[in-house]
Length: 332
Image 1: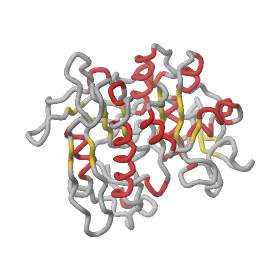
Image 2 (image 1 turned 135 degrees about the vertical axis):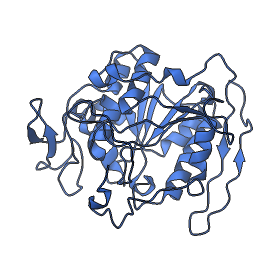
Image 3 (image 1 turned 90 degrees about the vertical axis):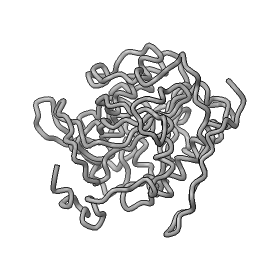
Image 4 (image 1 turned 60 degrees about the vertical axis):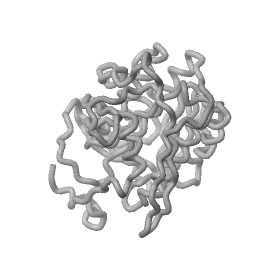
């Protein structure tokens, strides 16, 4: 676990530095109040495109890199000359057009008549490259795309109005992604806005949020990822479980009564949770063999109240953060 400074642009992005609690006060507040996973790894030892595919399909179609096309698109609407590097089943490297047809969790939900939406930046918007279902042919090129893939901004309104589907993916824009050199303050504020809308809306009492990042962003970590197959795992990424029904009061310091899970997890673990929740078949060996997240919940205990946080002033002089754990909505 060395040579992080040799990553392209690494020296300029200070890979051997870290953010302390005063840099990320709201994320620390969520971690102290809800559940923090300290052994959560990216699914693939690579960049954004293949890891985002794991968040919908528990695989990447063999892709191990971002598509090479000058950033013109990362899916089935990419230019005809676009190619993405893959690893074949025999371990050989190859290249294919970045448009795949493997089953996703969205297909499992659709087949069962369960509602779902993928909230993501739209074409020609910042962050559109991270709209993973764009790379799934039978979704991107059918009515499933227009019916279920909606602008990220719609999430707040749906959360406030109690119109969230059974399963939601929410993807942010590049300027708010917190990938170096993007502002972690602006990105944290965006997260707070989404979660405040959910916690103050009518769906809070029956919802769990899994908050994570698609890859390590170039930051150093001392924990070597376990090797499970050709593809991963990749380096650790932050992971929070936010819900009124998570365990609390265990294995945490005196500053809070949140819970820390030390179970080895990856993006496919989230898919496994959803499959267990709705009795769906696994998509690949990854979600079939992934560790369960169910042990992080206590459905017989008293549900946690919302944790309503304030966004911060971003700049050299950040404002102090006021935390209000009091309940602000009706009981559900």
